[in-house]
Length: 441
Ligand SMILES: Nc1ncnc2c1ncn2[C@@H]1O[C@H](COP(=O)(O)OP(=O)(O)O)[C@@H](O)[C@H]1O
Ligand SMILES: [Mg+2]
View 1 (spheres, rainbow, N blue to C red):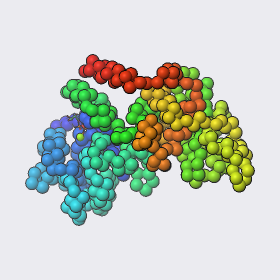
View 2 (tube, helix red, strand yellow):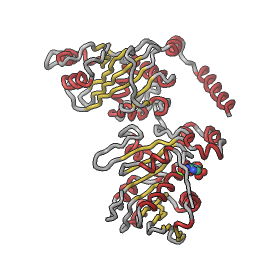
View 3 (cartoon, protein in one colour):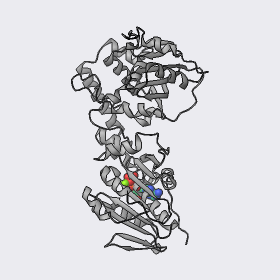
View 4 (cartoon, helix red, strand yellow):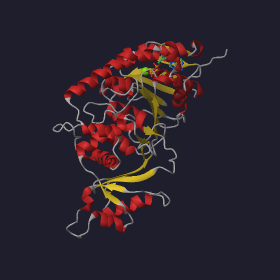
């Protein structure tokens, strides 16, 4: 008898993923858990006598979701399910075991186990310790591909470590790492046509969630947390796959130099003033001349850079040499530097306008900017300023601040500068916003 299963494009990408560790993460309802079960089923059939473990953080959650889905979609003639042991034994000897891990100490249950594939559903519900411990249980002599495959929504207790492990280091859908490779596949709820057909109202229900949860569950946005300075930053809106830049666009660079970090960005500006950040130099320990040399080397000869806007302190003369930073950099061929407008609060405000108006786009290869911009925190003492701690995450955003401040003012920024927001206006603005949302519903 023929048996067909349909999967979404992203589910297929998850199934065919070639990395040692794969995370399929994002919006709720994207089809992640379903994809996990289909993948486990296909692996079991393809690799006789293989052993797989599918984990949740509690047993009731496992039973409600994954086990039910598995019993539903896998043809009953292909396996026997032993419910006391939560094990599915397939006709070819393969085993799919369902398990849970609540506390760190629970890992001892798997102390002597060996698996070809371990699957975590809702990875952010687990601790990093649990994950790393289970990673050591991937072993055995079967010769089959050994993999960790996880699915999750953003949020929950494991949000931080999961983001650090899978999302921060590289653009999505790109295998990274050398010895142990990893891959992050983002999920969006609209990609799940099965759900959209069955329950289109699901989207509107997600729309009603509080802002932070809505970001996590509806948009699958990883850049959520309290105290975030640039809440308007969104990978969906601001990060793009590198593309050809039209030759008539103006190009310039922004540079925040420090021995602890050189953060240089290459920009293009279109005729409407939209900015695209297309290249990144983010490196610690560079002397002034080394930084200048790298910037020059990273810029193709035929790329016409109009100017480089840089930290004002480069114009100071240094006691020891009597030379200024820009003189030292010029000696390495980095010329055309202009002094940045270094006012912090107005600069952040302008950057915020760029983000809100979607007038800034960042190539996915600028990984440190994409990592640090949404990580920037509010300064506890000066509510319109960003915090200078942790210091490491401030360099790229400051460089970007120089960049936007070097551009002609945006029309909206002008009006804001002319008349400041009063608390009353802010109130009106909020109310207006709420009404639009209500109307949409
Ligand atoms: N390929 C598919 N075929 C049929 N139904 C699917 C498929 N993928 C997902 N679904 C259905 O869509 C809904 C949401 O999927 P689920 O895997 O639970 O999403 P997530 O884990 O991302 O929140 C479920 O009802 C699931 O059965
Ligand atoms: Mg799920």
